[in-house]
Image (cartoon, rainbow over all chains, first blue to last red; front, side, top):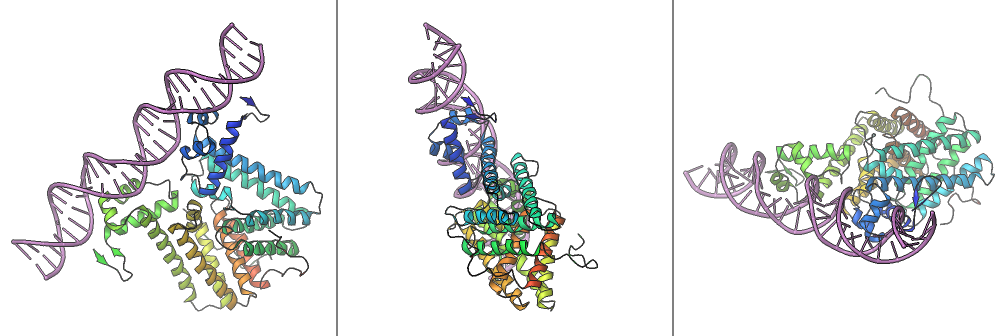
Length: 207
Length: 207
DNA sequence: TGGGAGGTAGACCGAACGTTCTCCCTCCTC
DNA sequence: GAGGAGGGAGAACGTTCGGTCTACCTCCCA
């Protein structure tokens, strides 16, 4: 077994295992898929699975880690284009929209995983939180550069639109979802952020 | 066994079973909860479960049906107050925000169920779609009455904000989520809907 | 010329899964 | 007072679950 720069082991069988797990977990969910399915479709034996992963949970975490790397790479690629801040936001949003409209789209891997692992102490849930924290910070920074103020509110607004679009993208016409999402982003860029509430009428009711 | 007006059987044991299933399914997910857990916490025997439900799937569908009734009732109660259309939208939104901020909030029962049942042909998935169709139509009608045009786009925008808020409400500070959501709704009511895109630059990229 | 790493093949474990079954008790109603 | 429905108690069904195990093969490299 060779060892990659990040300390994770690499091998053909391991890659096949992780790719298969990614495909099936994303398409069908996590709890409903057994390791038997995965080793059968990856064409490896049980022993090989447990040679590379401590158990199913480590396979799930690797799946999410791979998804996280993919999204970070996508954002980094857009930033590397050297567009204006607002156009960078637009390009990232278009990338999200393309994902939603692509065949096999099944929602956000992280939102789906969180739905299956609600316990905040569970490693899978924490991996979701970590990814979302990064995404919120990244979005907030981009919108700040694009002149949106307050940037925190704009970033949260952007993430909320994205979450809504990703969640509904496989439950409704993806074209209309993307149209709504991209118009929402455009509105966010144009108005800076949603109007602040009047000081004497808090928008948030007491709990 | 007595029979209710809607054709479903009613009994104390059945109600205990459904309430317990609702509580556990919502809090912990569906696939990860076995019928053993439910019958133990409902303090009934296996025979009683299978006397009232054909199987676990019928219990899941009943759980979603109960949630659907609850939400429809909530909206109906708001509409019965005779507020202006815009204030009706605000009141419904405040109700959503209160739910998000309540203890034990675990996201949208329907989005969570869809994450566990991605197959569009599955009865559980179809129950989710049916609920969402009703909600979209209801929101669109309310926003149309509130003067938002085009109402379709406004309705989709509202549902997208709600989905985003519900999905993130248990993954981030609920207070901030609600603030963002309610500001977004206010912006939607004020501007009618997001700005239409320029005719020569479609917001939706080709697939 | 070894020996370790990676892999295959397949038996096996205990536990949990959803489901069905029999037996018996207690009400309520005709 | 007979009968049926609702429910309790619990054994048992076959299947699948995640995980461990032994045995053997094949490279590659020291």
